[in-house]
Image 1 (cartoon, rainbow, N blue to C red):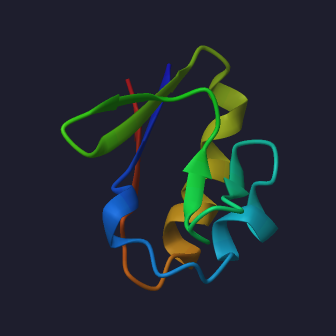
Image 2: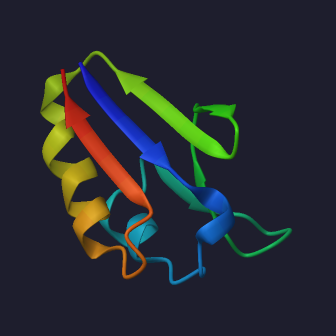
Length: 76
């Protein structure tokens, strides 16, 4: 299982995550910040759990592309 976490309140709206992984990230039209699609929010952290381990690489690339390092990925 792949676990992706986004700390949205620290997002600067650079759009890199959307360019790398458009199937998991979108930019909000309301505030210009990244949205982790199909995620659950808890205390400002948005978490997405994916059963498909093949998605780890694309999510990891999005995390590495983030200039403020607010995306994390784990393979569990």
